[in-house]
Length: 108
Image 1: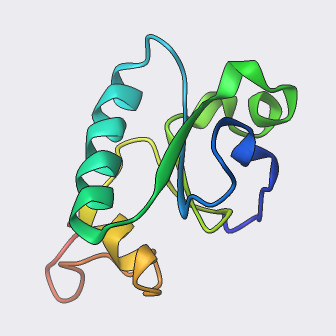
Image 2: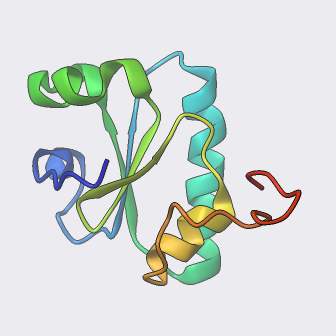
């Protein structure tokens, strides 16, 4: 995680802070798209979606982990995307510090 990826911008203008790497027919990708859309609208952040299967490099890097969300070109989350973690990443907070952790708390 945290590897910078520039190739993901093939589907957008190159100015998007958020990029969703997804796949057609992927139910987690459909759910992730809604999470990204909601966070982008709430924060006023530009975003784009790219198809992992349309780019050999993206396919090699992310095929078994879609959906993947990139913030400023760096991977920040994958699988079941979490809106609060995504918003924290946009705000510059470390993505791995999940809410609800601590004594008796799990990932939240």
